[in-house]
Image (tube, rainbow, N blue to C red):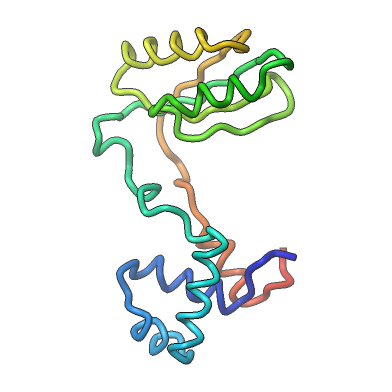
Length: 160
């Protein structure tokens, strides 16, 4: 079960086009009853599927112009302590458990190379971190996006 149907996808796409759209404007644009749009948005919010508005902010506007990915090898006896320590570092934007070379992949931001050095040193000092390998992002080719998947789902929820 995906948890979203084509109506939900259409609402989300309309919000991508106009994040400040009112429920009434969305209902008119999509040809749906106002109560339907309101109920759908309430359910999406209750399930935490809308995401936080702060995720829309580009870290560069806060002075963090350098983006990097840090692959971490951690000891297997302290993963909770390690991830809790990573969560306390504001420059660590997200962390994923991975397969392959390493155990965790962190997306981090820094103000410049010296700041990235400070950050990676701080990460290496965390209990449970054995090794870190940092890769700089040079240019964003395709930004983080959901639009194409939502468009497919809006027209054919069974696709994909």
